[in-house]
Length: 247
Image (cartoon, rainbow, N blue to C red; front, side, top):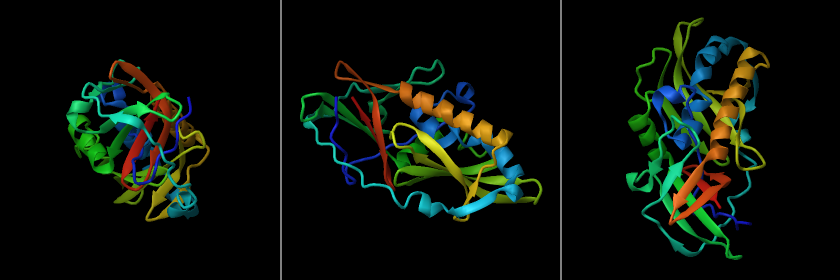
């Protein structure tokens, strides 16, 4: 089934993730964009700040993103029974009744069923505060976790203790959607607007593996609504919203 494209004023996706997924029991979408890529890597990133190589501006990573396409739904409805699920024993379902996202189902111009699920940046952060320890500021190595959505991706920031310098440094992990629009790639690390590459050593391998785990969860994401099931087809992100297109 083909889905027509989603307009910039419509909606967009994210994710948030967590390497300690089992312990925290976090809903998959929040986990993928917020913590799964970032948290397990932060201590290593902080320890290697002095060795990271600058590779341009973080803003340039998101400068050439195509406008969000338009998805026109025929006979749109907002099913009250909608639930987001992921195939993971420790990931809790997220019913639409929690008011943390909006969902609309309908059909495309070919009559194929389509669903749009939208998270705002502020709602994603609320989920982080409500459902994870990541945003509780109880970890001595990182605090003040914050998600900054960008066109076609996001930057996940935290204040990280840098032992070598004896100071706290705000560091962001830069994520962008790849050409499939169904998974994220790690573009590098942001420090004060400068993009730094992650060295191809053990740290780089770990970050890549963590990102892969988050992307696997995205692929397993399903929506149950109105008696039907929908799988993730595409993700769209702008400065304020993450939109999941499912069919």
